[in-house]
Amino acid sequence: MTTESHRDQILDQFTRQAMPFSTSPAVRDEQALRLVVEFSGAGANDTVLDVACGPGILACAFAKVARHVTGIDLTPAMLDRARALAAEQRLTNITWQQGDVLPLPYADGTFTIVTARFAFHHFLDPGAVLAEMRRVCAPRGRVVVIDSSPATDKADAFNRMERFRDPSHVRALPVEEHLALYGKVGLPEPRVTWYRLEGEMEALIKRSFPNPGDDDKIRQMFEASLADDGLGIQTRREDGRINYGFPVAVLVADR
Image (cartoon, rainbow, N blue to C red):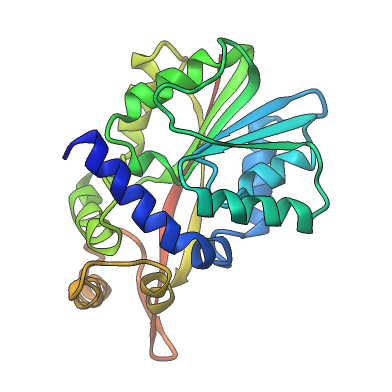
């Protein structure tokens, strides 16, 4: 896949996903947001960059404790949602910018915390993005990645399902691969904590835009996973619905 065609996929998917993604209870989970902000060590003197900020949910969470937050995203519809969320929460210490992640349009060492949540699995070259995040992070700052992170032996099945669900998905990395990326870009081994992104299968499909017919393939994969946990996402049936819990890794390294 070329960079240009992948960029077009991102714009197509996330223009359509802007509303359902931004209103998803799983994505807006206050406990998970609080965990990320606290684990990052964010405080009143920090300036934060949220890379591929989407509808601004994490950026707004940081803005409640940091001096200033900048959110950058490729998709105008996502930034519209971000502006609306900031206005709803009466946050005035946020700047939104439309732009791509390679390269990030900021000088070296501009921010004290640089984050990316639920974005790395969409990057064709996650190592290059992490290197850019390191570059724009100030010395003694922190580089934070939050993303779905399947077990190594479940990664192929998990990523196959995710590509059916969202054609702009590239690859969710097992935590061992995240650790290796941090080392390759010259960051120390990050501190790691975990949480689960929980939800219901039909709601997940509804806020996604699979190619025609692929929604049935997703359902079949979830059904199969009930028997053998083949996707590694703790599927279970409750009240006739299939619920899930995606493993999410939070990685924080000092710059």
